[in-house]
Every structure is written in structure tokens, then in C-alpha cells.
Image (cartoon, rainbow, N blue to C red):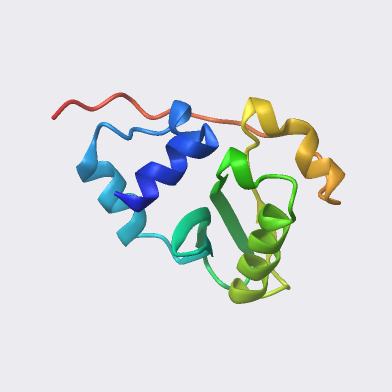
Length: 124
């Protein structure tokens, strides 16, 4: 519930299957690393990554409550996630449309060759 709530408060819920609790539970259960940020007990930020812990890490979710953005929370979540999986890994993410300029601002390099096969919608 907290994860879904912060996804909503960050606007990332627009691109996540929050209505499918089974998928959300699987996303959390199968993540290699989850980092959180709290303010007074309230979950205000989360990063969720999948990694082989030696070569590459996919940072699949970076969500910070809009009321807490521009305070360094996202940058710190990324730093701690990368540190936890090993700084020798390449950290990869797909930027949400509203966040495209953020990642370059914090020193990440854009990559022009990303290819996708989108998942097919599943029904309960």
C-alpha cells in the first residue's frame, strides 16, 4: 500500500499497474534492491532495482513524492542503490517523460540506443 501510495504521489503510477496488486507484489518481491526515503514516517521516495551485482543494474523505479522533490532525495536514492549493487555495475534506467531532463542534470549520460519489446497487458 505504501509503495502504491508513493507511486501515486510521484506521478509514476501513471506508468505502473497499480490496479494489479499481484503484479505490484511481484515487482517488490523480485527486486534485487529497494531503497526508501521517509519523512516523519511517511514514505516519500523509493528506488527499485534489478541487478546481477557484477555487470549491470536496471533501476526500474525511482519515485519521489512531488511535495518532496528538488531536495536531493532522488539523487541520494540513486547513489545508495548503485552503491548497494556495486559501483562497478552499469546503472541503466528508462526515464519517465516528465523526468527526462532530471537525469542529465544529476550527471547521468543519455544513451541513444535503447530497444524495447513492451509487455502484453495481462488480465486478472
